[in-house]
Image (cartoon, rainbow over all chains, first blue to last red; front, side, top):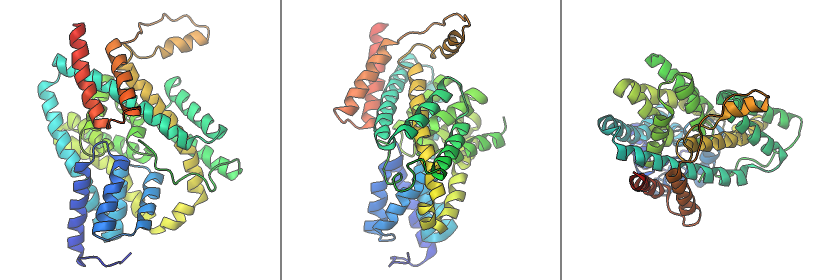
Length: 201
Length: 201
């Protein structure tokens, strides 16, 4: 990983990490995979801090561990470039623009909340979000569902949430155990397939 | 409710979110709306809508907004920190074992179970948004369940909210067939909301 960095000094690298993830967060709306191309541009092509294969690792890892995808990427790259301080700098970079924008919006909402136009606009936006999520369920489904095992899990998770109001935390934990068990008994899937898809949107 | 509780809620959410923004919706809903009743369902829908159209990762936007509403800037900081800490800790560990982690059968097995379950959970989130936009009331789940088990609960009021349904279809078509970016679809949805409800009086 110690390829030719332009600045050898860790403090410089930490600042650059902060600033780059700040820009990435400020410029992407909707989060997640929208920022992968920007990360590639900044860290692979311009700064040459990491290689194209490292990007493949980043994409695989950020989806395989829990958390916000953009923040996971910031921690991963930050840690590799400058250790824990680098990871922290990356996260603070990702969080700051979102934080400033949202606190401003929240303060404005307490001012103007309750205006009928605003309420109507929000019903509109909720309908729109509903449609966007439905479409993303459809396109994710095409990538994730490969047979009865996946269909079974999708339907059980849906039914447990909607009809039985099970806490989603338990759904995730149970699904992880079922996946492990499926892998253990060699029922299907995990060995070989899985991973490399770039879900969402 | 204390700041520590707020921190703990977002820590849990950060720990159990796999696959980014949308996957977080059912978890947030369970903890914030059902369990601790920090916000109403409609406010929660609005926050998720705002998080989609402002720069920055959706999860961070949501944590900041909810934290701010609960405890001002301090609350926003605490909520966001709670969400980020699991990422920081887990990735700081995983980064040392990237290859072993990527090739681990146990990790692949767990993800093979978690991915379809998350898909089912996001499908449930579609219904949740529909309840606050396309339909006039929450789905009569309790009535349905008691009906199925032979009980005779009265059927609650439930119907279609026409402006919401129209916007849903417009957004679906605009995104799927005309490939209009998500941000513009949500802006269009807001404008349509004001116009359609204005026309209906």
